[in-house]
Length: 250
Ligand code: PGA
Image (cartoon, rainbow, N blue to C red; front, side, top):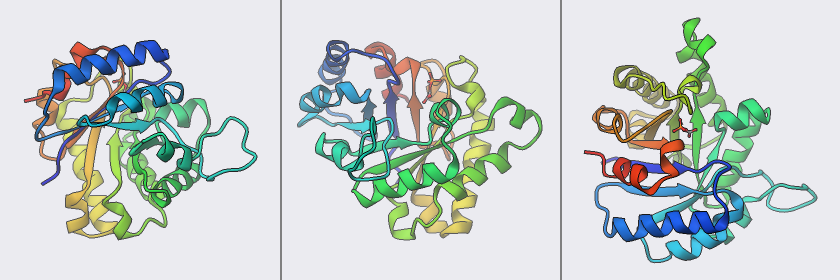
């Protein structure tokens, strides 16, 4: 019932020409994909070029961040309206790099998420604990807090448009992935939290991706877990070969 979503987060990598190269390789290999949804999230500067190539293909387009106003005097910001105009269907909000490097807090993440929804973009809400938080036994508390705050004032009707990405910060870009059991356990906790806030039916319908050093050699066991409904892939999404293998998880 939940169609797995495999998304590539290219972060601050790829010139336009490099982005076009990568997406052309993905398109020529993928043909018809069934039983999964595929998404790429290039940097803002490559969205237009990639968007043109993705027309009439099964690969979707997402952005890595968004501001919460539709327009105005906000130097350097990109609005949800502009992302829709580019053909984006999804947008990441609250990625740990945005939280840690750019100082985004839960309140800002929530505003961005609600703005995305208001403009017909599907937000991928990223949550995850740091290593010290996990070592202190606070991982579940941190993650459920991020879920509650990130979804504040989001109604049940809108929840079906939201995707959650659980990305333990210590696993991002480190090659140090969560074990499938630890990931499953947190995903189940997230789903229980959603059931408490909304309903069991709403919680059962929402997709929860795992992110943090997802690679060709660990994707199958992660995707075999009952509450893991996709992957948010950084490093391994930058090369066609590794991303394609992840997309073709078995
Ligand atoms: P990684 O990044 O796959 O390189 O660990 C994941 C992410 O930050 O979304």
